[in-house]
Length: 272
Image (cartoon, rainbow, N blue to C red; front, top):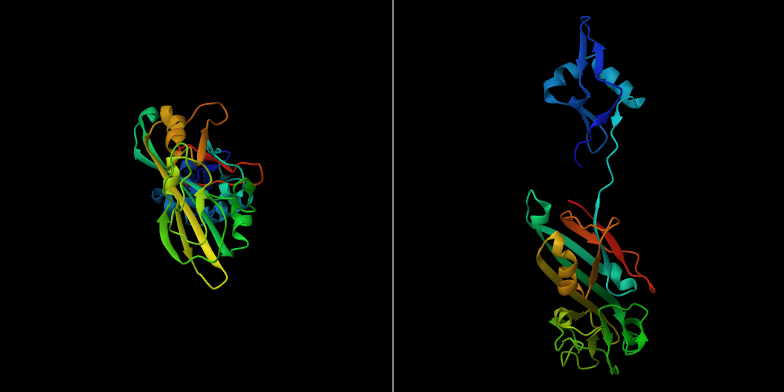
């Protein structure tokens, strides 16, 4: 955390051991991430000597010198999972500033969206009830559902992408799995970026990891909503914050939360 400026009733003033009146401006002080008061190097020798140090300690204990309140971050945008349910809590949105500019409207940035759904200890009799099947919601729905019957435990499968996804067709696992078929939860070419991994296979159970990463580049404030809809709409929706105006979001990663049942997971991106 960056240093925080102090607040107080005026300059830090005291009489030194020689009877000289000393006045140190509050701007020479700051609080570090641990809440410890420090002083600018130009004043260190004076401020660290008695009686200045004792007076500093007393004033901070009494709150006469305290960290100034930090304004709440300004919301830049709201991102919401495109589908309701708990799987939205597995979505991470990462912002990278690719071309900063003094004019925020000219700054370009990139949004990467990842979702990773992990299922452990699946069995042939439980997989459809957990992931869901055609017209039957699962208890932990995610990126894929079971398409058709399940005949047994699958063989291990290294990370493999689904195929066949179009505007009108759901991507699917094709012939990569012989004991059942998985298909993307919704049609769209983005489903071809869904990757499945099967491991920890035993005679009766197995683990399944389903992951998707989508990217939208060269975004500006004016295009953020349309860029998200075009490139990332399979996973998220971008909404303006309170006030209705988008801002350039701060670089970093944000996890969506609050998804469950009919509720969509969401997060507020703060302005940079």
